[in-house]
Length: 80
Image (cartoon, rainbow, N blue to C red; front, top):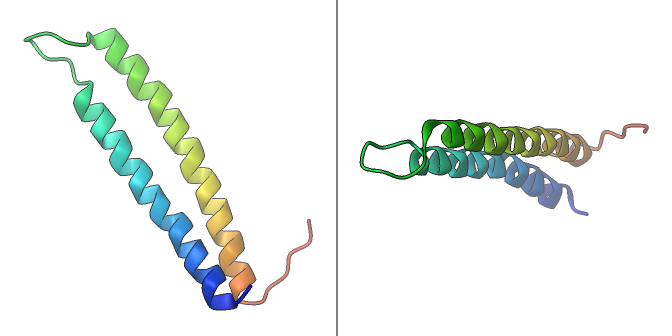
């Protein structure tokens, strides 16, 4: 692949992290317990933890992938 395309893919991987965080913030906002009804506090905390751990895992994966792609775009080779 051309190095500029690889660099663009790396930046896309880092940009996806921002999307994951925004989606997590939307889920947290939507699941905040309200006095007028809806989800209770225990279910909200379980939701925040389960979605938060998933977002953290996806973010970590995209950081590793983005770093590898940036190294590849610079022409650096790494051994497995």
